[in-house]
Length: 296
Length: 297
View: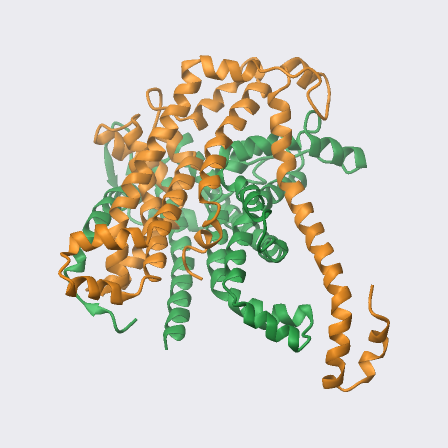
């Protein structure tokens, strides 16, 4: 990292990106900040409200505060469940993918397919698939004798959304790990074979350490995406039953675009963004430290 | 299927067990190969089953859909597809979506290239902070931006155009493109830049004639990701358009009409939205594994 040339003219290379991101990120963000400290009486007349919206939002005893607190909890529970299932399952799938031969291409294409389906279509697929009357999954599960109804029963709704996300995104973890596994030189495996190492110890001592870097990317991307999830639950459950699957994004869109409650929405946005930013920062420092250690 | 000798293995000292374990592992290898296929097979079936169900639904008439559960279409019809291809609102939706996705991909890759080069090759004032700030945009929930984007693009007169969506998707695609390209550029030795300079190449000529071909795979992978994230996004695309640039993902909400759900039409539209993705993956299938690691393995 330190042998890079110091050259401030590199800024010219970055300028176009900076211009674009300023336009599409900073200006909108300033609008949000602006709304978050003002209140309106209608007719585009705004007055200063200080930290009022934030105080309301962070106080769980108020209406909006309670709603916000419950949504945060749901988001973290959901992300934790997603990571707990998708990371091990993704590693398992990556280990079982073929490394060479004719099957590699078609298998990878099938595996990547769910990620390229528009998110509302993913929602539609599962909405249809999970229905008790016309959906295969819903009909079969009910036939086995398990009561299942993803629009009326909160447990079913949660199960559907978690399974849907596993269906949608485990492939990304698998492909990341597959890339990591393919980068391990054959010599490592040969050495393990000579030592007659057991499969489990090959995994623990050779494969897992080599996967560390891609796994950090996988955990980050999965955390972020699941923490921002909007479209798929919106289509499948609409945030219901009640508010059982009303994650932060769903809640926020309801407040901002549905109720046009600008002050609350803006305060909500900023704190939501702050949470993702904090996690992003933790990740970024971990990643740069890992790279620095590798460079040393 | 263990080798019988293996029964004695635990009582022998570690070094002596190695050949025995090797003998046993031959049998275990075959079993492991079987297990590998079972895991993979089960996963592939689980992936394809919901997709099959959607295709199944798209080929049934609405009468057949509502009259009961059938595992395959007993009277397959293409009516839903025919409807989509003849109704301008529907096929227009596809055209709008493809237009803004292509615009966004071109913009994102073009402006990200020099920036990724700068981040990888030089140190400059505030480089780390800037990179972090870029990445943080990748993590920003689109729900946060829905409302301000609506205001912003209305103010500049781009609301309800494909440009609004193409630019809005730059919010996450530009940082993503910078991040992926930086990973691939890191794989090109710096000596190449220096050699080209000594050989008298001007920088623009070096960058276009020598450097870009070297990272062609990385550019392909980046374009793939930009395409993917722009194609699948729905919230911003729907918020920023009403009539003239309505993307297919929001046209699909038309099937929730007062007459109930038009399941067959919805399923057919869903099937059609999978095709561009499938085509694009097929082109990058050889780079897909490394690509998903963002060039960082």
